[in-house]
Length: 252
View 1 (cartoon, rainbow, N blue to C red):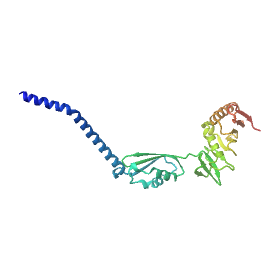
View 2: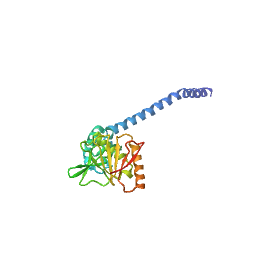
View 3: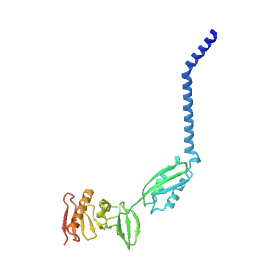
View 4: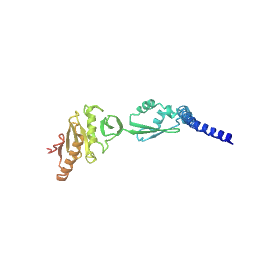
């Protein structure tokens, strides 16, 4: 009986001393299993056709040819999502000048979603017998046989599309609140420092330099509102070139 009790005590002692090593071994086995599963998942994602691109989904297009964009990116089809060539995608998208920017999103297991932001025309520019609708970067978004009523005509004179003076004109238009912008029929400027606007009632605006566009826009809106309340229909010149001292002059 004593001998049996001694053997039981010895076994208990052995189990007590080896418990930590057993726990350590179990932890190592679990960790190794996780590493193996993770490695296998990475291999599947990177190399397996199970995660290959099959569908290119395009969102946000209006003027851009959606099918043409998908076709331009079709050389990526069959490539695992984790190995898509985003430099090549960037070059392909650059072939569509009407796209201002884009965002890509991978939607496993087989889809790439491309959401584009198209260029938005701000002014119209006379081009022969038609009008080019142009964005702030000087990119022609589309052409129209007549100037849209909602878009001012940019009198660029000798300025080139995309030049500093042209960009300043578009920045002025964009700075205007909608209540004033809807009244602008013409924007001109031989340089970036002498921008002028013409309104529907033939009143003009001396804007001046591109400095302080928000302050000038707020001042102009206040001057126009005040003048229309006091002397509706009277053609005047608004001078906001000094945004801390707006002036309304009678036109002769």
